[in-house]
Image (cartoon, rainbow, N blue to C red; front, side, top):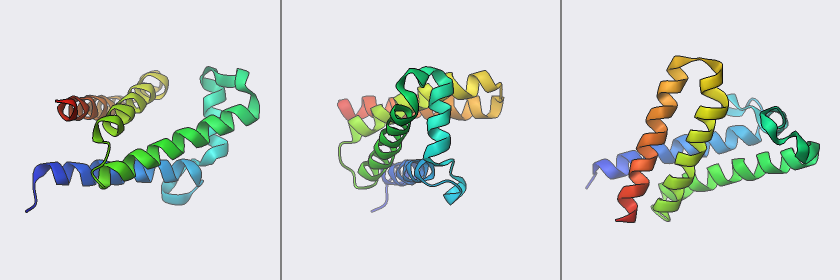
Length: 125
């Protein structure tokens, strides 16, 4: 039987599998790629890590986003996956979207952050 939680998990799972893959492969699914991700991280205050450090952090973040998406799809470790992705959405909101002033992206990331946070809280019960 199909239920709402399954539909939500499929939607979020696919969104973050896509998000993880697009951070690895420039141009794939509209992806930014690891080089651009590392450049963004350097410009966001992590320049002290150097080129290699920001590249590694970018790769780890992409891998974790991809893994969280897969875990959501297979219905495993939902609390940790939702909580991690809520944190990622908060960081994207604060570091990228609020400074850009793009209200549509700000609203979308507020919705993602609060929904993922709520799902994480529901899983902890």
